[in-house]
Length: 353
Image (cartoon, rainbow, N blue to C red; front, top):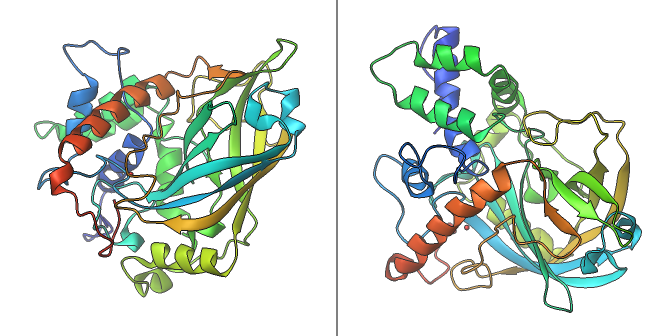
C-alpha cells in the first residue's frame, strides 16, 4: 500500500500509484445501492472489490478492518437544539460507543502505511434512539458521485487501456485535489490529534420544523503534532493503538463537535467540495473518550456504524452516499458475522471495524 516507488514516473503513472491507495480510502465512504444499474454493480460486488489480492480477511470488516474500540460520553451543551430536536442535543450527558480506525481492508496493516484515519461513533439517548456516524480525517472527498467511484474502479481495473486513469482524471476534475491532500499532508502522531469530518451532508430539523443542511466535525483538544517521513518510518506497526490506549489511561481525551450550516448555494450532494470557512457554525458539545475497550470481544465487535441510523430531528439530505454506504455496510456486517469462527477473539496485537 506504500506506493512511493519507481524512477522518474510519469505524472499519469504517479496518479495511478496514488489512486490504488485512494481506492481503499474512498471505499470507506462510497458504496452504491441503486444509483447504478443492478446489472453493473451491487453492494455485494462492490464489497468484493475491497478484498486485497490475497482475499478478504475472514471475520473482519471489509474495510477499516484495523481499529480500536472505546466508550465514553457526549456532553451536549444544548446549543445545537436550535438546529435539531434530536434528543442528544438537549443539554446533558449521553453514552457513546466508538471506534478509531484505519482505511484499509487489512487488519494487520502497519499504521504508517495507511493515510486515512477514521472514527465511527454511536450516541445513545435515554429513549433508546441512536445517532450513528462515520467520519474520516480528510477535509473533502475524493470523488463527487457514486458513479465516479465506480468509474475509478473501472479505470484501475482496466489492464487493456494504459490511458484509463488518464481518461478518468480528465473526466473527474475533483480527483486531483484529494490526490494532493493524500500525498502531501503530513500525518499526526495520534488519533487524539486528528480532526474527524462527516463530509456527507444531513438535514437537521428543529422543534419549530425549520430545516438546516449541515456537516459536522470533531476537533481535538490535543494540539496536532505532525510527523516527518523519517519519524513516521520509525514508528511501530501498531503505534496508534498503543498511543491512544496510553493517553486514555492517563486522562480522558476530548473533541469538540462543531456543526457547520450550509448556505442555500452550497453543494449539499457533493462531498468532494468543501464549504467556505465563513459558514455559520454551532458548537454542539464535547466527545469524551473515557475507556479503551477490547476490540475482539468489546462493544464494537457487532456494531455497524451505519450513517443512516438517525434519531428524530435528523435525516439524510440529497447526498446519495449515506444510503449507498449503508447498503454495503450491511453486506460487510453479514459476511463478517457469518465468518465469526475465523475471527481471533483475543487481544493479540493488531485490531479488527
